[in-house]
Length: 138
Image (cartoon, rainbow, N blue to C red; front, side, top):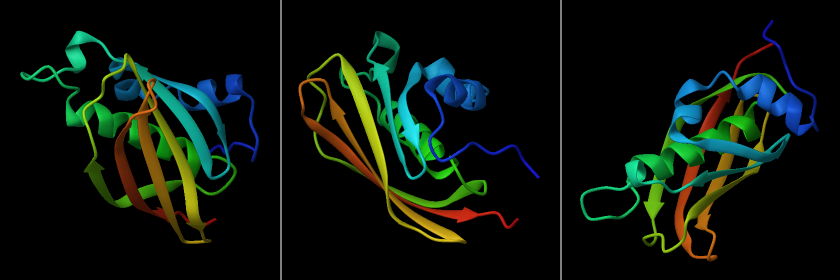
């Protein structure tokens, strides 16, 4: 059985567990908080996150949202994997940092439904991601 986190791990435990996500680390994602069915992650916007028009690349926004989902859906329960995600880009960021807040809409034994809202540090709504996850059996 895979290693599992408690429902309310410390920030150190979260970083130890999810620190092996090399892509999220390389992208600059960091954990702010996490517990069962909830997570907040941030990303400081750097030049390499921008597209040719100077806006934050959609892939950077999605990566941050997906990292927050991974924490919310894999803390305090059986491991889960995404089976479907939909992202809606609401506006371009005017800030210097992106914040992804993920919460469970319904967290069942086999399926989980999550919404991740991405804002920037000015409070502007940047994107919304809805995801369905499948939970591995015990």
